Image 1: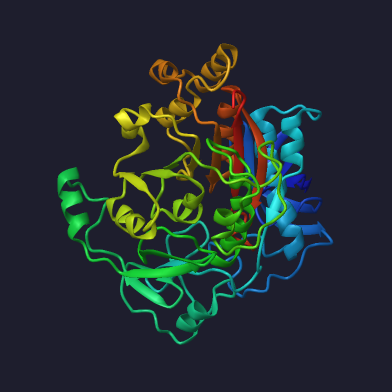
Image 2: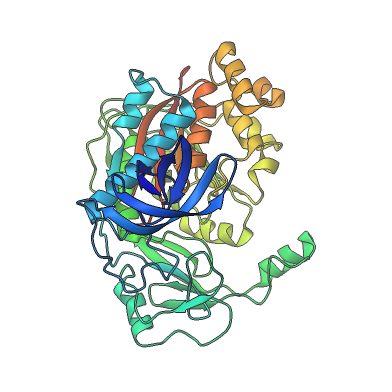
Length: 452
């Protein structure tokens, strides 16, 4: 059967229609005409595979990497680099338009339509990898592809692959630049008590490394989560810090940019509905899902105090080190537990939140939405989320502004819809293009309370 691809959706497959029914096909670009075969059939959609491309897109190219289609990564190599950026941006915008049910003439739609792209190098950018038994997993399989090169990797990692310098062992290897760490023998997937897990976590060896970001050294464990594209992450901080500084929180220091400049980042000209001139925020920041405190370490000098919430105790040990000289408190627990602590009753002027792929936990979302604006908007939030915590509403301590970071456009858009229904306005949307050659998308958004 013959289809014409309409667009690429989250996950990287193209979407087409057959008699009104959606069909998803990998390795096909928007506008391409192809003969396909249906390989899976479901009630509401089908999945197909390409038999032959009948009309190619002008942006299609031969994939530069010899492992394309074998290795499970880099599914957009078939499009030229600039076209890829637009494909990823369109995916992000579609997710937000759909979840927020935007009217084309609304202010929120304008923010989404005008979303900016923060990007860097398209090749040789990736600092962090998880290798499985010396290679990467095959596409849609558990078997391993042995590699002798990876053109998206930074030179230090490519040298490891070309020189076959990765340890020969079964299991997972964590690599950051030239640093290699083997997976701990203690599996967090084993059936162990929380007490035993935390006892091991405290005594477990740490394989520390660091990265310099905007003039500040950030320390972390090679085996822990950290940014995979340091070059573009620096550009993201350069763009984000002036936005954070543009919000007047507490005492305004007009025209004083010393704190905003302290990260040694080039400042981009960015405006929001906050102060038109960059002014230093002087209130309390809550960093939810803080990890090793990267955002707090780079943005915390704009605030009088920072509170970090993170369930991983090992990450918080690094956070304490990374926030040296910045007043801060840490809470080693999940967001779900934190909202029931006394600290959750405080008024935080700003929140920066970087949740896992599944998005913001429901109790945390309820806490954020508590009394964000008028009773009508709170009621709207209640219907959007199923229910809004009465406990959160009674506190009335919703932040003035939320700086939201996400590694999944679908859950980011879902959370955006809940926040806007509860009385926040989306003021900024950026695509953080950390993963060229792939369909993986990260994003940054600013949500401002109507009452602020």
